[in-house]
Length: 376
Image (cartoon, rainbow, N blue to C red):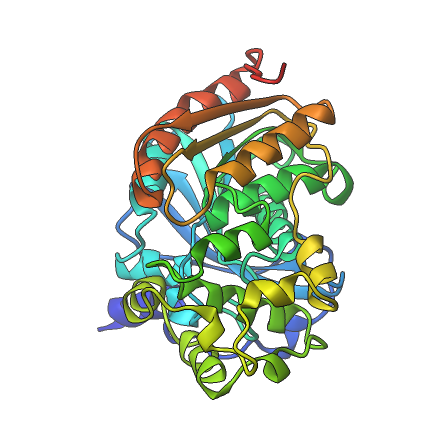
């Protein structure tokens, strides 16, 4: 019984609101607390609370998981800060909690990295598993959480070198977080020895993603984005735009994980959720929403580390063309980018070839081999 209780506490399932000490000041990446996390993974897992920074530059506290391989290869541990794809908005959806429960759908990818000898640090993102709301697909907050997760892993006494090389990896929401972190690393975390980043199916242009999803099977995910905007920018007049049904869906999705949301609202058209019957995309072209949406655009800054982007040409969630435009923007700014379109259909299907390409890419970055660039 004691073992079960310790496991629940470590997994965060019995963890309540953060204490005063956990929300006090500190530097980004400082570890607030760390406990063993029993989880069905090929490694030793630790659940951590660490300092980070929100959209407005204010300090916050984020949770995450650091996993060290059971049989690490010779030499210093290589660290991958891993950004998970869409989990949902409820605290129970946080990767650290799902790792403990054995329900995390990204666990096979994380396990592959562990088996390959990487240490893996997985952020839960702001407000997912900790007090407050999750700022879903918010560029700055997710990038900060990913970079500070790496800092926290280096600060732990688990064998990760304090000044060793770091790589980033993620797909979908995680691809956006990885790409945004690669862009912000030179200014936000210049001390990190960032050697490369894999970013799959990046939602780089949220306006384009919203237009693509509206009325499609994955339309419910738009509610996550609107909730995320409300959390990051409480001044936005979201409630003034939505009708009763729209506000109800926002409330419902704040207590859902991804599978529930996708299954519950397939084909929803956002024009049925607004007071004046216009789709949400109309509002994204108008102030004050336009400026806030534009702030999320990935590609206006230059990553200094090489980046691999893999995206299905038949993605049904994140449109392919806006990633091609991201690559063009980065190439024009002098970045080293390898862009790999894959013919494997659907968003879920595209994750498999993406990750298959990511592992050798990451191996090459840690080995110091020259990165491939598809920029002209």
